[in-house]
Length: 406
Image 1: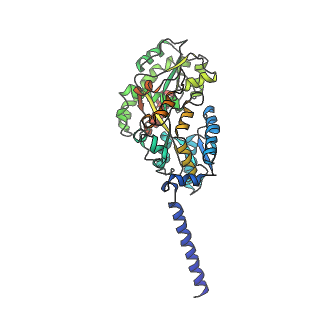
Image 2: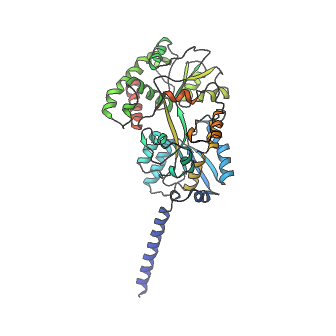
Image 3: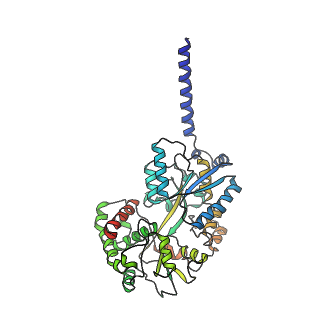
């Protein structure tokens, strides 16, 4: 065989082997292996968890408790990387567009429209959640089937629960309003004493979504997916409610707190009579840190209190997929869920189904002292209403700017 022909065949063989190897490497993913093998692969590795970094107490919990347990239990080094969800979704979009098959993010803290956008753009690995032992053992599949109305389908694993509450100081307000209609009457009777963060701040956006449900006849009509005609008919009722109370708001509605932290400050100083949070133990957290007086309590409206679940997800190009799965699974352990349930630590509500816990573990959760400012599950669950599809969220935020702010 001529030398040139032999060399050409050799190059072809090498190329075929390389292609075969890359295909096998792509197919050989942690999703298809026993979890014990995934833990072995992850041992001695590093995991980079990209997450919202604006809560100091949450950062401390991750940097101390979670990092320590990951090292002791799995010999995994955990690095928390603070970054807003919208930014890391854009980062992944750019990496996918550039064909970058190995990125820098192993695990994401994500939900809502960011999950929807990431999933539709093909930025997430999955389905992986059903492969996690703690999902199989402790999680009710029906409770995590949707994220803001969007099908999860195993592309993210639950991490914790949140529900919208209002805060008031019992030393200043004897009886807070219990309905949306009563809230409007209270605002008009107490000029300058109420406001809400300016959407798209997460808390301010949640506040107007909750009102949207109440003034348009409930959330059920929106659960089947975004309907632009339905939105066009119903949204003006929300704009009318918000514009009607605007002259009686703090600063006469000429300006709004730029974020929830600003509202916290106004409430702590007594400039406004009510705070609000999508985090039931938020007031107790503030009492423990000395920011709020110990007379502060929380309440919910009878018209409904929104709840959601926050999740973790793995990017398509995560460099340490096995380590990400081990971390995601650990976060759903009874120990980790208990650790973050304590308001002195964080107060994040567990994502576990109590009926799937052992009697001993149920008692451990029941024994957690949530503090006098925190409503318990039996007070929150009866008024809980789910988040609706993310496109409604986006439309409400745009509409608020156009029809209320301007």
